[in-house]
Length: 125
Length: 190
Image (cartoon, rainbow over all chains, first blue to last red):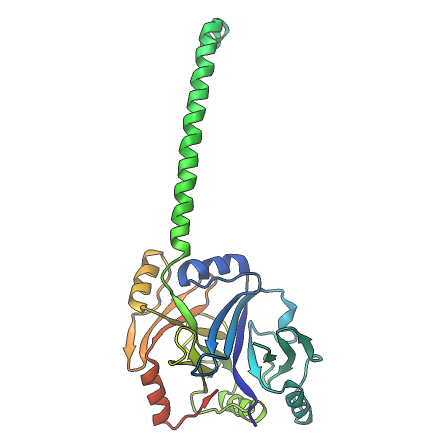
C-alpha cells in the first residue's frame, strides 16, 4: 500500500531565523515569510494537481522538534493518514501526538527508530 | 576667541547664519532623500533577481545505521529504498511535462560529506545556471567549499550559509538522473 508519496517539507533550527531567512532570500532567492517558503510542483504530467514542499527555519528553542534532539525535521506527504496511523500503532511505532485537522490537511507526528521526529501530512492541496 | 565673536554678533549676522543653516539643512535633506531613494530602487532591483533556487533536490541526514534506517522507512512508510536512499518523483511547477526528483538519503554518522558542517543534515537545492550563481555568490562573499563538479546528471557545488550549514547546489539534468536510477533498477516514489 502506498504510504508516503512525497516530501512535504524540510524544517531546521537556527540561531537567528530572521537573519537566516534574509540570507537565503538575498543569496539563493528563497523568499520566506513567517511560515517559510513553498516550493510548488505538480503531482501529474497534466499540471492539474498541485503539490508543495514547505521550507522553514525555526529558533533553536522551538518545541516543534521535541522529543527529538536533532536540528532538523522532515515532513512527509501521505495518503490516508488515519489508516496509516492505526497501522503504525499496531507495528509499535511511537506516535507522539493525536492527529490534528486543519484547512490544509491532517497532521500527526511520529518517531523513527533513531529518534528523528517525523511530521506526517495528508494534504488538501 | 570664538566666544567673544559670537557674543558680539549683530542681529544681521545672526539672520545670515540662520539662512545659511536652513540652506545647509535643505541640502542635507535633499541628499539623504536622494540617497534613500537610490538605495530603495537598488533594493527593488535585487528583490526580483533571476530565479536561483527552484526546488528541493535532496535531503540528507546522519544516522547510526543507514541500512537499518532505510529498512525502517521501507517497512513502515512504504519507501521504495535502494542502496543510496530513495528518490521522490514529481512534475516541475514551471512545466508539468518535465519530471523533477528529490533524493532522500540517510548517511553514516562518520560521513565526511557534510564537512565542514557539524550538523545532522544537509539540504540539496535545485538551481538554474549554477555557474552564474556561484560567480555571484563569490562576489557576495559567500563561502564556496569546492569547485563546480559536472557529472552526467548535473552540476554540483557546495557552499556554507551564515550559520555553518553546508548547502549542496544542484543544476540538475533530470533526464540523465532518471536514466541513472533505471540503470540500478531503482523505483521512484510518486
